[in-house]
Every structure is written in structure tokens, then in C-alpha cells.
Amino acid sequence: TVRLWNNGKDRISNFNITYIVGSDTATETITDTMASFEYLDYTFTATTDMGAIGDYYFKVFTSLASDAKHSNDTIWYTVKHLAPKIIPYTNGFEYTENFDGWRMEGNDYKRWINEQNGANGHGGTGYFYAVPDIFTNAADWLFSCGIQLKAGVNYSVNFWRKVKYASYPHKLK
Image (cartoon, rainbow, N blue to C red):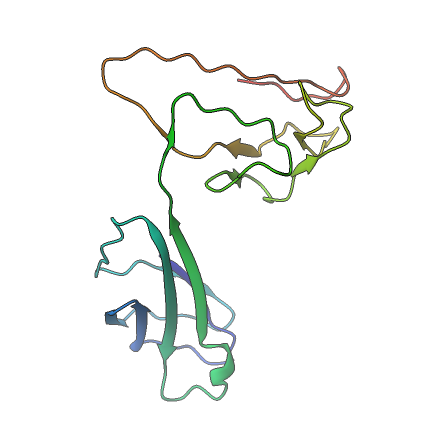
């Protein structure tokens, strides 16, 4: 899925959108009408096999005959297909550790910060913390990388957490 923005003054429709990744190319026609300064989320019907571990470099662009400014028609994006971590897996959030596959999601995607001052780390100097908002509940998440698990095996997950001030409205659910 890609998000398109009509930055022009005219309504647009019936234009092509193309993606290229490796040797795969797909061109489709967008028939929806986009008003001036309107977003449209478009999901390609074509698919690309990204089953092999590695990096996939996407180029996505639109083609509209009446477009006066072609410099904003293209985006490039990298998708990383990472090998899952093997049990036992630990991460102490030290700068020397690998954070591939970890991701942040939420309201603004900028609330998680990796610190190395040792003040709040557990067994080391590193830790992640969410930048607090004392007025609203936190709605940002830090997700670990993929971990390979075997069916029929019970696993236990351990983690340490700390709240800076008891008055903050954040709760771990």
C-alpha cells in the first residue's frame, strides 16, 4: 500500500502507478478521483515474492500526462526481510547490540529513545524509554524483532519496566 497526495489544483483520475522491485515490475491504473490536496491509499493487486531473507528496494512512481511537476512523482523504499532470532534471545539495549527488526508504532513514532547513561538500565547502561506526555495516556509501542519459536513448546518472556513518575497516566497492559 502506498499513500498518494494530489498536490495540484485540479482533480485527477485514471492515471498509472508503477512499482519496480528487483526484476518485478507492476503497472496498474488508479480510477479513483482525487480532489486537490487529497490523500489516497492505494494497494497494488500485483504481488512480489519477498520470501527470501534480504533487502528489497522498491521504486514507486505515478504517470499522469497533465502533471506539470514530475520531481515529486517517485518514492524509494527498502523492505528488510530479516532472519528470526533464535531462542534464547536477549537484548540489553546497548548501542553495540543489533536492533534490526525492532520497530516503533503509535501516535508519532518518535517517542521511544535509546539511552546509554546507566541510570535506568538493567545490568548495563542501555535502555529504551518513552518520552512522557503527562496529559494523555501513552499510545506508542516498541515491538521486538521476530523470534523463531517451535510449536508445542511453552516459552517465558521476561522484561524489566519502570515508570519515571507515579503521577504519569501510563499503564502497561
